[in-house]
Amino acid sequence: MSAIAATADGHGHDAADHTASAYHDSLLRSPVFLGMVMFIGSEIMLFGSFFTAFFFVRFSHAEYPYDPNHLFEIPKSTTGVNTAILVASSFTMHWALVSIRRGKRFGLIAGLALTLIMGLTFLGLQMREYHSLGFVPSDGAFSTTFFALTGLHGLHVFVGATLLAIGLLRACRGHYSPDEHLGLEVTGLYWHFVDVVWVFLYTVVYLL
Image 1 (cartoon, rainbow, N blue to C red):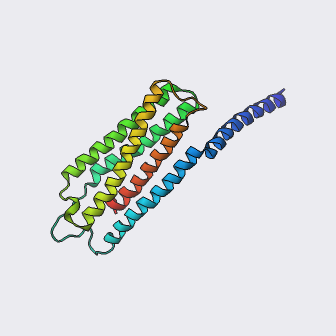
Image 2: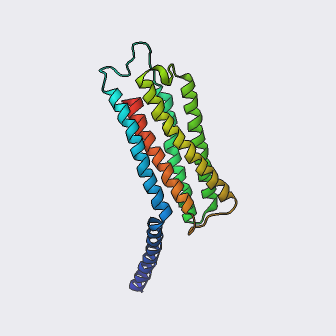
């Protein structure tokens, strides 16, 4: 009997694993998902060009940030809080995706709502940071690269927040199912990319 039960249990796990692998296989073959992967690849190159300009300015001076006419003070601690908020939003986004895969609509809606709120909070705090800085983009090479990098990332966060708002609205209207939620998968992939870029940006620009 135990052997039969073990065999049956094994078949159950095999069926579940087969279903999950079949779903992910279809996801990886989706032209929409692959299109997002290629788009993110192009965005990596875009950010790479901006980081190249930043590193050039960074290592062109022994003292950094350097400008004889301006004093640059970067708010590391407050931006660290903002970083924690954005990183936390990746977990709520993951929660939303796991919930819809399991057919749990409450987790989907709550996860999307929390992710959107944290994304908008990040943008609000970044705007507040811009207002409190003692320099503007025209104050030299450092300020130009600083605003270019953080502003480019902020634009991507805004795009991600727009996608989240659309997804949340559709979820509240009863859209999406465990088998039909490709738009959320694409949005989640984009959001995680935005978070990873910011962690690297915060480490390089603010901490180092």
